[in-house]
Image 1 (tube, rainbow, N blue to C red):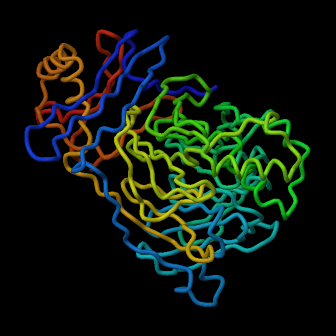
Image 2: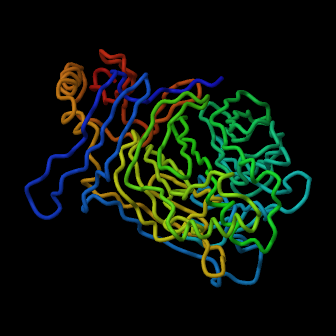
Image 3: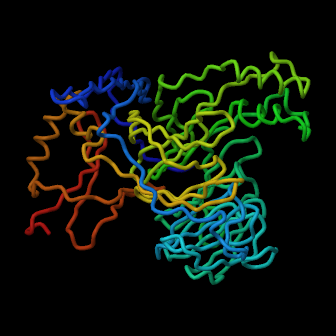
Length: 483
């Protein structure tokens, strides 16, 4: 099974922490931060959130850079996106944008400004030909991998779209039509599949298509017995809505640190696990109740009547969310359902340890079947417009400088003794006091740590355990003599 890094935080049992910023004594933006409590119970970190940490001035904003598509495109189908659903987007090493859709046997390429560049691929079973492509990823040699989940193949292209090779995909089953595909720095593709008993699998596949390792992450929710033998008729509009949205569904997302965040649609309760299914962290919320209102109950009653199903024979919930995305720095975006049946354009934001910060309005929706590209604070996605015509949108998240409370500030407020101990340990080191910016921190599947940084800046990094055996990554710039 795969090794994973336990980043669950403190291991001190029964630790209850009230995370609350000090109320500033100036202006109307000085409201008290709502408390979040953090405990460790049986080795699992439990975060119980209030209604958010952000003050008004700390809210993130989204700035849309471009939106192209719909009626703006011409009549040449090779230069257009054909579908607004079941799409995946990735940002290439040359800054170009690559888009694929399950129902389209080609990859469409745009410039970083949204101008059409080229398309490549065609329908078929031969080398470089597609049948229901399901995922995109770039490897360490700037080659684009296109997965065909149900056909059991990967096609590999260079950055210009020139076909390189095809290799087998070890499994032919998909948990969802479009899914993330990730390049592991150790030299393998991390793919997603599903087992015969409906458990989400993460696979490491080498560049020859050979299976390196497999982890069973989380079980999918079984189809309710009352629905298993029901064939939906085209005229059953209410039943189609019930089946698609009110039946509980599990959503999940693979984080950059190798852990998995998941939750069930009727309750905003996030669970962080290792890729082998061990629970690390549970994040509780109370700000989004999921009670069925009169409109929900009317739709459910009509839908179940269409199919001849008794209300007591099936568990149904009002969906709270229908997507989880994890950013490069570990922040979690949860797509909130404002109206059942509509795609989310509003996202709840949690910091990497599960503290609820506030809500972010994208200004466009991301359907649950679409995989956006999240690169730093850039979001690139396919969104439906009028008549469901597809648009390609690029936007940037603008974070407030004040932002959420930094980790050292929270530690000073919640555990002054620990903060003082860490301060003394740091000062005792024979290093310059400044801490250079680290662009990204990653861990391989074997647990090896590496840093993405500017060459020649002299950074050093190591793992240090405190008196509670909690690991921390220390990053410093050594003195000239040490370098």
